[in-house]
Image 1 (cartoon, rainbow, N blue to C red):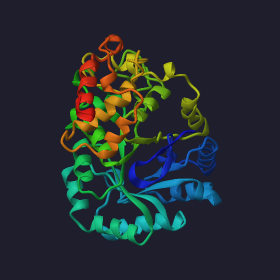
Image 2 (tube, helix red, strand yellow; image 1 turned 30 degrees about the vertical axis):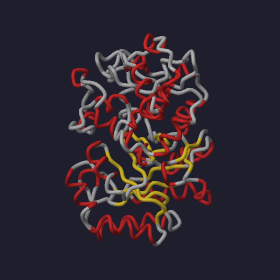
Image 3 (cartoon, rainbow, N blue to C red; image 1 turned 180 degrees about the vertical axis):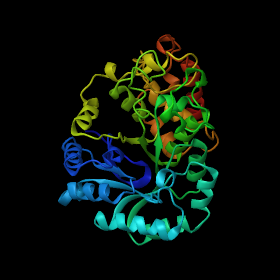
Image 4 (cartoon, one colour; image 1 turned 90 degrees about the vertical axis):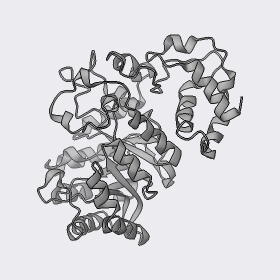
Length: 382
């Protein structure tokens, strides 16, 4: 297992975590074996959004005295009231369910997640009411360690981050979702099929969101890496062939600010299969050839796949591009940390010889040479 810093929280989380959604309504024995498998491979972050009492109790029981080995994302506003996605903004109801979650997991939740910020109403009903005050109170009294939020909508996520309140977020990330126009609702594609014709390219709002998170040190935990299983399904994939599990994991882990991918495993075997990511070769992780099979999907946009490398002068092109994308959000106010990270690279944009080796290998027609020149100007003043 590898571990990454989760933004400015100061927490180091496993690059692969576990989303426990699919253990809902499963027998305790299955919950126990899945939890044990996650701990066996070094997972140290669980997402527990499910509001049902039984599944929460089963997870807590399965952890037992190993509760201190994992950090838990617990969701404020996830309630079992038989409404769509079991969301509530009614404060007595919200408090009842979250405080029950606190009791089950030892009186402390590592990441208190403001649940489901997808619409303008979601945003207002959380950030402009006593809902957010409740979360701040929980943090002040030490019941939660950090405030985060969950979302599937890049526009609302950007709005939430710009309040300055969240330290991290859980967001749905996979290549198909990144090609959806930001006004599309990702849940509409869980039941139906992805339509190739809807893919217009890398959605600029999603690209902006990832760069903004890196800029503001908002750590991301990625949900839905397999697109509800459709991306790894021969019948439902929008590409020429399905992506593999390691390719989906690698895509999410190469987005800026992503610290951990949280697949929804429901068996020990599924958990072990996802953890194989660390055993496969770079070639087996490479997703670029498959996602480039959809016409014009990411044309001109760097997806940090490193297909362009090795560079003859040893520029880490993918990392340089991440820093450049962040800098472009506000060229007059580049975060000092980003500038420092760029300047610590062994080879920089100014070292580019314009040989074109990278551009001849790029599946997405990225103007790498120009980007290296831009990086040199923005960071080095050359």
